Amino acid sequence: MSRAEDYKDLGAYEVSYDGTTTLGTSYEDWIVAKGLVFPGNGDPALDADLDGYRNLMEFAVGSEPLVKNSVHPIRTSLETLNGREFLVLTTPVRSGAIFSGEQGLSASRDGIVYFIEVTSDLEKFNELVAESPSVVHCGLPSLPIGWEYRSFQCTPPTSDLSREFIRLRVEMED
Ligand SMILES: [Ca+2]
Ligand SMILES: [Ca+2]
Image (cartoon, rainbow, N blue to C red; front, side, top):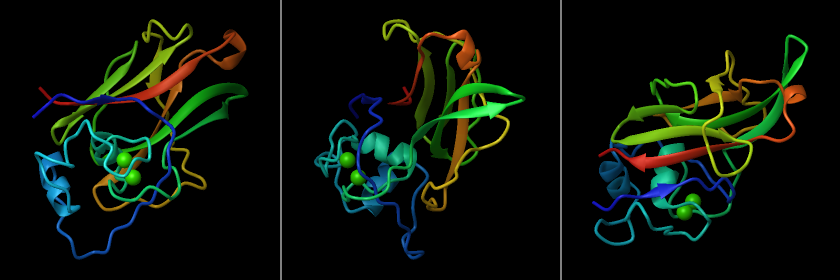
C-alpha cells in the first residue's frame, strides 16, 4: 500500500452510521465497507469525493469517503482554562488512541498514526502541545461507533504567543 499523508483541515462533511454495516478496525476493512476498492478509488492518498480530504483522513476522523457535503468534524477554538486562553484543536480519532509526546503528539491506532503538531513559523512543527483535560465538542456532529472526539491545546497560553498554528496529520503505520 502506498504511503499517504494529509493534514488538510478544510472540507465538507457528513458522518453517518446505519447500524447494519460491520465497520472493520483497519483502513482496508473500512474502505470495503464504504464501497470503495483498493487498489482503485480506495487508495489512501486519493480524495474519492473531491471534498479536500484524502481517503486516509476520512478514515482517521470517521467521515464518509463518498460524501462531500456535510458538517466539518474538526475544529479549532480558543478556550479559557483557569483564566488563561489557549488554542485548541478538537478532532475525532479512532477510539482508544493513546497520545504521547511533548513537541508534537502522536498515537498509533488501527494501522494509522495520528500526529498533533504546533508551529509558530509554518516551518518547524515542534512546539509544545498537550491533550486537553476535557473535550470541547459543543456543536460538532455525533460520531459513528469506533471514533471519539479528543481535544489538544498549545501549551503556552495565547497571551505568550504572537501567532500559533495547530494541525492534525495522519499517516499509514509502517
Ligand atoms: Ca474525500
Ligand atoms: Ca467526505
